[in-house]
Length: 254
Image 1 (cartoon, rainbow, N blue to C red):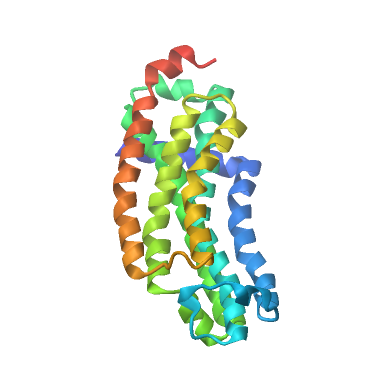
Image 2: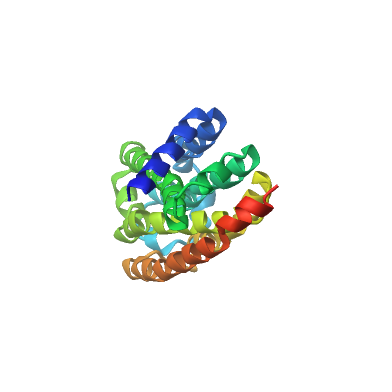
């Protein structure tokens, strides 16, 4: 495990040194924390949102309901955030080092493949989970300050908390695994990120389903989602490890 921590420390050091990468990591969580402030203020004054039938918001007044619709929409975006940030880091971690020729010397050292991959996966996953949780915590605080009391209890439900706390690391791991697999086969960061966008399509479908009233995020639904995501994350991580071949990188990457 010592070599894993060495690689992890190296990755963190490179993230801090790359200002553009650091900016790309911090900007989405910052926007996700700031933008809801404006929409929450506008949400309580409009009636268009009241036309949406969201089961979890039943029993609220019109003013509370419109705020709740806006808050529900933004609360689900934090699930996407857990996939966006690690994808950015993972893309640079492999393709960036591939282009700068800094990965080959590491692979030539007596570091096992699983140690290298573990270090790189954790270097992308840990910052993503931390900034997602911090940004989500700020969002909850904003709800408590700028919305009516009933809105918070209807939006920040037990089901959402389970999804936010338990599923965001799993979704982040899935995003990293997919990006690692893609990055092992392409040479352009933008191409890798564009291909990885397809990974968030199912999550977007769930978000739209809840906003349209077709899906309700209950405790049972959150638990089932967590149970389903665990084997998917493990399987995709294993698949990414199989595609990440030391010999291929050392002999074929140009």
